[in-house]
Image (cartoon, rainbow, N blue to C red; front, side, top):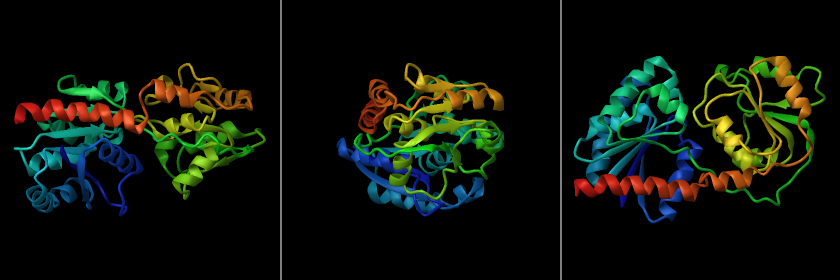
Length: 294
């Protein structure tokens, strides 16, 4: 199976979950090439059509897999003879201006993947679709530190969607530093998740946040508002909590977190959310779509 991945490359790199999914697909036997979109907004994506058509002509993929709605629209406009699978991650559905373009991509795509049931519900998409969250790697369990006086915030303070003011208000009176998730390497983030008191998420909207799944793999306790698919991910996991979107309630929940690791790693495996497990689900979709075209 020859697959062309289409995704944003505006930061001179693909998002980590795209890179990891590509690696898992290759390990599972797919031949995978990537096309990086360097441009913003509808105009920026439309300008990429000629270059994308050139790459499609050069490698002749069996299927195109686009990440985010704008990439899905781009892929479908570039070629109609090759089936397109589009994965929607959250912002492409939550933002009204982008949602309209994503809805067009949904109609044109051979298959649509949503990273959470809540996201699929909001998109009102029921045909040719399924829910498959992005997977995660299994971090080495022996990597453990001890930073009980640190709480890791699930995002950058200047990202308004993450709602840092709510988190900072909730942390008042707690003997711990709220650490901004910004400027760390992937390895450093794993080190923090393996050592901090807990991960705190106060986002206003999410799809299926990778940091939650990474925290589970690392056995990191989690305190989160009910957003995205977090409730489903932490269900049945010890020392992980869903709290109301209220600073006092969050404060009390953070204070109640115990100094013990969670069974989140086992939950990730049971839910089929390792990168290799997710790659198998995606390859099944590819096979079902490509077979009729052939």
